[in-house]
Length: 410
Image 1 (cartoon, helix red, strand yellow):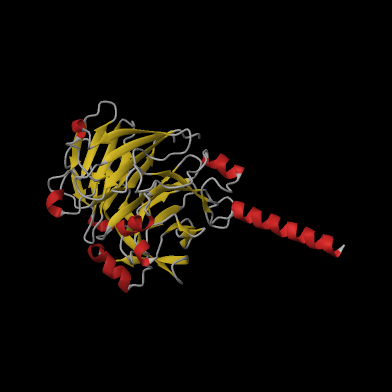
Image 2: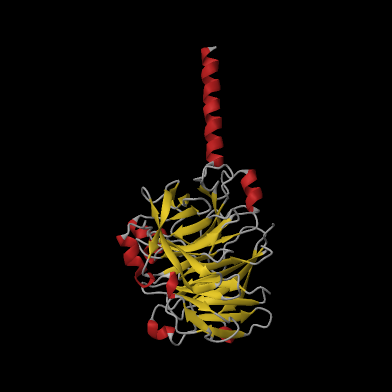
């Protein structure tokens, strides 16, 4: 009887362990061990391995049933005059025009290479929207019909494109703070959330005095009471032109390079905190709840190791599908790519359905087709059936490409 009880206890322990592995919110995996419920929510079987730099790279590695069409490719002679370094994407309300920012850090080149462009998906016509912005990165459409563009450098500003169908109808919105801008979230009430892409970068909130008028308002920085997660408060920034220094002096919480930000279907704000693989800080996805009296921020997904391999690393751009899954691009450093000999990937984090605050699972969606660039600008159309993706070259004038990926089942 005692021997039988030992066997039963062993079987029970193994059952509990296998259940935990299948449903752990920290899971980073390929096809192995993924539960049927997770596959159903994803709509595909994950890609198990990245493309390798020492092998011929001719296409994106996608799940079965998905297709990728190149609509912009600067290596194509007919499109070679298009601006390079295409970073973020936004569609206009008709979904005919694709707007893109072009991240040129060199200020001299930024005067000659367009900062924001408009691509007519139906005709292939290409037009310049804005020029002269340095490191144009973040791009979001406002509810009142304009575009916000963030400059990703220490003295960067947010610019508002007042007429996206004209040339250089833009105005600097200094009230939103001067720092390295990428992440932008615009709420229906006109409040704007921002992040400073710095090693000690803060998360900010701008509340305009008047809806749709971003020239005046109050800028705040997030200060967490203990560490960098948990309950916090919003600290008033009195000098937006010196926002970073004032945020530090007032004890605002610093995050290691917060970049893209997206509003989730749960009305929470998701933030890609990139980190740096060389410093063994592999990045996190944070989740900010600002719907109550006090803001609360927590970790939603972690970068790092899985089964001895460095996998999901340095998250950068974010986009939600119709099921509430969060698509995340990687942006590891060049040395990381040389060390691991793999390309950058796009991952999918399942929503938190078990209520523990963490993603219910993290899986590889695709692996890109080059070790000379990074994925960026992930953006779903309104139907959720098309995902737009840019491949940004590591060097100016390298091949820039924009893909449309289909095969999603909503």
